[in-house]
Image 1: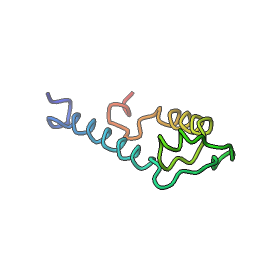
Image 2: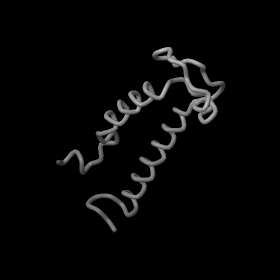
Image 3: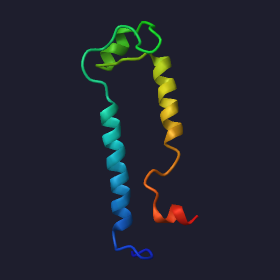
Length: 88
């Protein structure tokens, strides 16, 4: 289905590109290597079960939750700026 001045499939390609970039961003954030025994933000001990479950973990649950909350708030806008969003 054509939409305005775009060629067929352009919307699908934009959606796929958005998904791919988010997957790439999430993979880049994954911790690697040896886990820390204490949080790098607040220096609280990181439980052994968390270190085993998440190899390369660097923060405690509280600090990670705060960090994730900030990421969600930053993701509330359209970074790609589609033509439709600019017209509204």
